[in-house]
Image 1 (cartoon, helix red, strand yellow):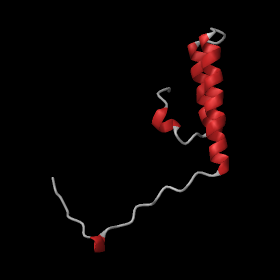
Image 2: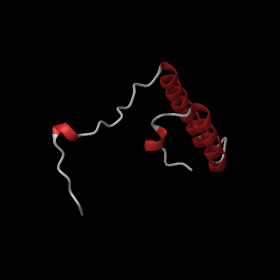
Image 3: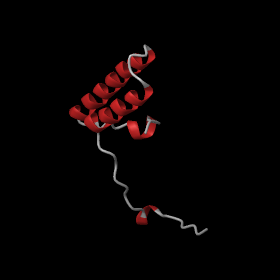
Length: 75
């Protein structure tokens, strides 16, 4: 393993994440509301697990939530 010591003079700047836009925040909220509704439908056995997974996949494509890659464990 190779280690390099960085001094303040030769540090490179890493791109700071930008603040989410209003549209991104609204998409995030809409995604989570849709997923909550989807869970309720599945809990009441109105849709199957496979249908739930398919709809969830479509929700991720439609809303493009920011946090989903970190939090989602669905295919």
